[in-house]
Length: 173
Image 1 (spheres, rainbow, N blue to C red):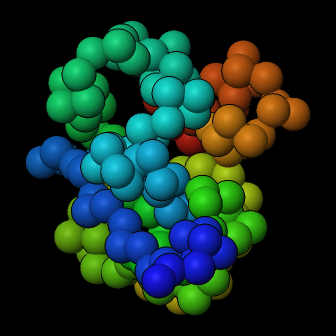
Image 2 (cartoon, rainbow, N blue to C red; image 1 turned 180 degrees about the horizontal axis):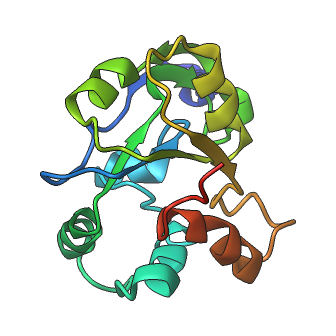
């Protein structure tokens, strides 16, 4: 017999594979997919997540299109989606619940896609985990406001402004 408390216990979860087209200029990295995203097998599958609204504002890719069409259009802009973590134990979907993180091979991805001009980290947790890794390339990174529905302190227009860096090349420093 299963104790009801076991139903909420952290279970190991495996993330999603990267999505990308032939040419990749921007790599968007989350920390790890939400439960809803894992069940749907879709990046940013929670309809409350602002990611697809931001993409709609920046690239005019309608968020109500099928997932496959949204991904097709996004990859046509040279944008790839993946996560810093390949697996972890986590209760629910909150990043603060992540335990036993296992990292994706981001060095390998960056080597295979040398045209990447920026790694966009979706939120502070993705940024923290990314910067714990030893990355062998000099690709610039930017930590952007999390698109998670839990990040209510940053408005959607503010997120769109911040995320616009994935649309235009970063200024030369």
